[in-house]
Length: 382
Ligand code: TYM
Image 1 (cartoon, rainbow, N blue to C red):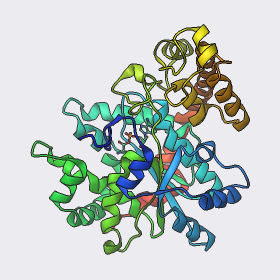
Image 2: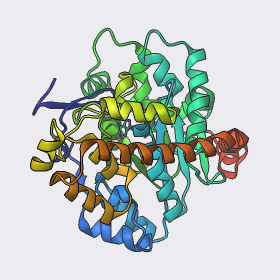
Image 3: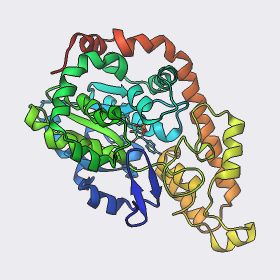
């Protein structure tokens, strides 16, 4: 159901998202200047580019998280991934940002790999497939460089024994009509996926401290349910920091999604593929001919190469401003900005793959042997 010409659910994003309207609809808050100033001061002036540019733009209770931090009560971070055949650069956004938060605040990070969710959501997927994808995706997540002693990565099908008592306590508080209305389930929905929201909520109760969740705003429906019931179970309401969606290559509507391959740049795409995809598919706000572009300039609000540079790939504020000026005034051509983006992405991916090659060595540490991982395997959550 599309209201206002767009729709956002945990599984689908369609239309041109109006983020101001979404904040109103979901009942979240925009990140204030006050919060930005405080995070800037805690990070000693090294505010993450995605916060400076408001890619992370909305929150719930982030002010309370910062208060808990100031008062020495601490907090922890939680994020996750439903494994699929290949991760694309949009999927990396919350992980890159979570790693920055961990560096700044020196806190525990929990990363849930929802092999169960993936298996249950699609009749065609086998458990063997979701296991293989989990392993491959975890290597990409490890490559982001979290603190191995303070990070626990877990697969639901493996860690379920430790989570199950709390999962059933959560499940007992959620009734069918609420869950059905929140996620749009119907009578054909399998009963596994009906129960699944309890599993995604459990990690918000891993510690008796506030949990801050960095994720795109599509995951918000889970946290709304969590916030209705957390206190009745003796836990904090989850706090969140929400990002916008990295748009697909092909349009400024919707989100980059694995289901449309030409819309995404995968972390495994080689330099030629990246360049070819960008040159061929990247939706341009530039004019049809070089002559017209010089005369009229580009429309930055729909131009994907500009938007991707703005979201993550050009971190230098002065440079991105200059690019925006030149391109919108016709002093830069579409081919030039596309080439610039392809080079930036290839440099980023080369570095990512270099780290990923070593990730296997750390796999056991993040899942089983690191300080936090060992403690977590000894704990049964109630
Ligand atoms: P999944 O695997 O669909 O997505 C993983 C994370 O990536 C974010 N994301 C995006 N961010 C920016 N631009 C995009 N185009 C884009 N596409 C996806 C998602 O918001 C998510 O943060 N159910 C979850 C897995 C999960 C989880 C969590 C996610 C379990 N526990 C806690 C966040 C926090 C899922 O299907 O994510």
